[in-house]
Length: 125
Image (cartoon, rainbow, N blue to C red):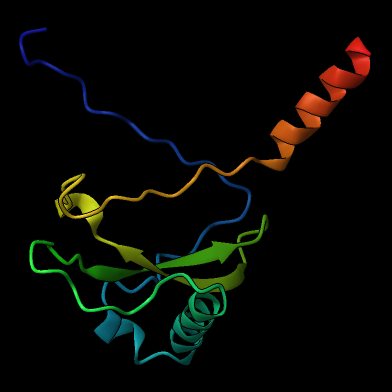
């Protein structure tokens, strides 16, 4: 209550010990490893294939946003490495609604929601 707090104690118990993190924190670290280069290439290929963006000149009154790479190692349940995943994410926290952007992404319905609605419809006739 008076700015007195107990430090949080985290106890990690696992059957399989997890190796220390091998995830790079920047692109210059990731470029030197072929697994991360391949993960970055796969991400860019997927973005291009899905038509995620269009390259256009910025309007005069807009503030262009940057992007950064985020690297994660996906592991199997036994702790072994499943795959290397690289994501290119936008740094949209500097944007102002109505000034820097006018459109937002439309919501996407999850399959679990569709199953729930259909099961309620079946039960109620």
